[in-house]
Image (cartoon, rainbow, N blue to C red):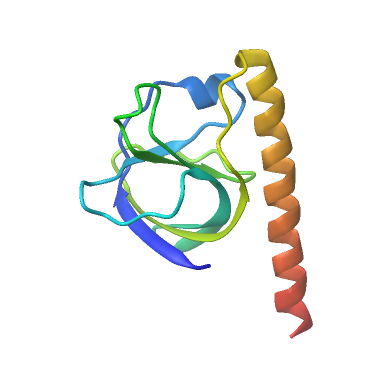
Length: 129
């Protein structure tokens, strides 16, 4: 799977930051075809540089606010207002019902570990070629 999306980063609710995984939020425009809701590993291009990323495509708390939340692995870059391009590479899990902030923070940390390991494996494959 390799799907790309781009858009301007808009302010979010701050939930992901509280969970230890700050994200850049891109509102998904009506009519755009997206893959299934879930958590993905991929790459994000910002100002011509690419970063390994953990990406969550969800429908918000109300089920009506389709959005893409992008976390740059190992980076702390202010992205509000910038245009970014996101490439989804692989789905790592489906969305789950929100179990509470503490439990969700643990799940998100596990997702970040999985995504980092996935990206390191990709870099190893690239350097071997």
